[in-house]
Image (cartoon, rainbow, N blue to C red; front, side):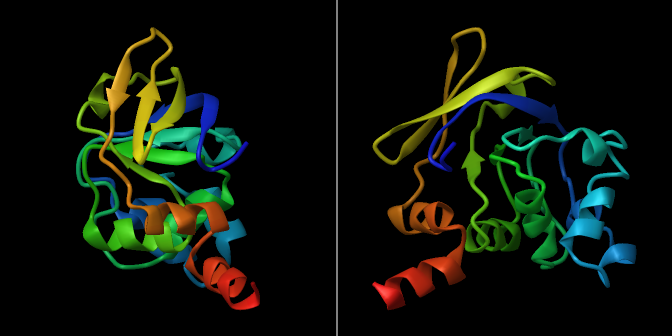
Amino acid sequence: MTQRAFHNARVWRLGVDVDTDALAPGAYMKHGLEVIGWHCLEAVRSDFASGVREGDVIVAGANFGIGSSREQAAGVLRHLGLAAVIAPSYSGLYFRNAFNLGLLLLTCPEADKIQEGERVALHFEGDTPQVMRANGQVLMCAQIPDFLMDMVDAGGLLPLLKNRQQG
């Protein structure tokens, strides 16, 4: 599976205003992503860390990633193998941290139509992502600039810069 497309991704549904402390709880910040991952979202979805699988997606309400600037809040989702986060809006700091770490964020005004446990796919029409629901409905997302997709494809900003320097 490439970062540009996913098929048959299982949806984990979350509400609005999911903050960075829920994603990477402060009590575990002295540890690495492996430990933080076991506590990711435990305050809002106690079944998440033990049940999430590589290629799954989070679908959330508005303001995903509000709170602190801790990059571990995006890094832990990459570590857990999430294919993408789909939400109508994101904290500006979280948005930038996520792409810098290679996590795909899809800004989708109609994300609320996607249900818990549903299987979805992602396709691109040029630089415009589309979420294909299991029932055939297509949800359009905001365009993603090439430079951000380059970061996702490379696995983050640092790997992208290393690749450019070497090649």
